[in-house]
Image (tube, rainbow, N blue to C red; front, side, top):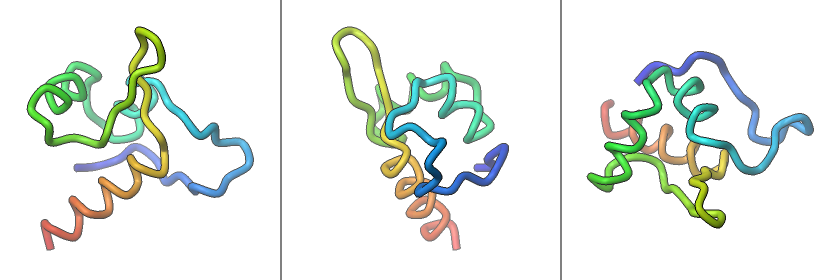
Length: 72
Protein backbone atom coordinates (compact mmCIF):
# COMPACT_ATOMS: atom_id res chain seq x y z
CA UNK A 1 0.00 0.00 0.00
CA UNK A 2 1.68 3.17 -1.12
CA UNK A 3 1.32 6.30 0.87
CA UNK A 4 1.50 9.75 -0.63
CA UNK A 5 3.90 11.30 1.83
CA UNK A 6 5.89 10.51 4.91
CA UNK A 7 4.35 11.80 8.13
CA UNK A 8 6.00 12.14 11.47
CA UNK A 9 3.71 11.03 14.30
CA UNK A 10 5.36 13.50 16.67
CA UNK A 11 5.01 16.51 14.37
CA UNK A 12 3.54 19.48 16.28
CA UNK A 13 1.49 20.46 13.18
CA UNK A 14 -0.18 17.07 12.96
CA UNK A 15 -3.53 16.75 14.72
CA UNK A 16 -4.20 13.59 16.72
CA UNK A 17 -7.32 12.75 14.67
CA UNK A 18 -7.89 12.62 10.94
CA UNK A 19 -10.96 12.44 8.74
CA UNK A 20 -11.33 9.63 6.20
CA UNK A 21 -10.28 11.92 3.31
CA UNK A 22 -6.99 12.77 5.04
CA UNK A 23 -6.24 9.10 5.73
CA UNK A 24 -7.21 8.09 2.18
CA UNK A 25 -4.87 10.74 0.75
CA UNK A 26 -2.09 9.61 3.07
CA UNK A 27 -2.49 5.94 2.11
CA UNK A 28 -3.01 6.70 -1.58
CA UNK A 29 -6.42 5.00 -1.78
CA UNK A 30 -9.90 6.35 -2.55
CA UNK A 31 -11.98 7.24 0.52
CA UNK A 32 -14.61 4.57 -0.34
CA UNK A 33 -11.85 1.97 0.10
CA UNK A 34 -11.56 3.01 3.76
CA UNK A 35 -15.28 2.52 4.23
CA UNK A 36 -15.03 -0.94 2.64
CA UNK A 37 -12.07 -1.82 4.89
CA UNK A 38 -14.08 -0.66 7.92
CA UNK A 39 -17.00 -2.87 6.87
CA UNK A 40 -14.68 -5.86 6.31
CA UNK A 41 -12.66 -5.17 9.48
CA UNK A 42 -9.30 -5.08 7.68
CA UNK A 43 -8.22 -1.43 7.69
CA UNK A 44 -6.88 0.90 10.35
CA UNK A 45 -9.07 1.21 13.42
CA UNK A 46 -11.79 3.80 12.99
CA UNK A 47 -13.67 5.70 15.69
CA UNK A 48 -16.95 7.57 15.73
CA UNK A 49 -17.14 11.11 17.03
CA UNK A 50 -20.84 11.76 17.05
CA UNK A 51 -21.94 10.87 13.54
CA UNK A 52 -18.48 11.36 12.05
CA UNK A 53 -15.74 8.79 11.48
CA UNK A 54 -12.23 9.66 12.53
CA UNK A 55 -8.87 7.94 12.68
CA UNK A 56 -6.01 8.36 15.14
CA UNK A 57 -2.79 8.96 13.22
CA UNK A 58 -0.90 6.79 15.71
CA UNK A 59 -3.22 3.87 14.91
CA UNK A 60 -3.04 4.49 11.15
CA UNK A 61 0.76 4.43 11.28
CA UNK A 62 0.75 1.32 13.49
CA UNK A 63 -1.63 -0.46 11.08
CA UNK A 64 0.48 0.56 8.10
CA UNK A 65 3.69 -0.65 9.77
CA UNK A 66 2.04 -3.92 10.84
CA UNK A 67 0.67 -4.44 7.32
CA UNK A 68 4.11 -3.75 5.80
CA UNK A 69 5.72 -6.22 8.25
CA UNK A 70 3.25 -8.94 7.22
CA UNK A 71 4.06 -8.33 3.55
CA UNK A 72 7.78 -8.86 4.17
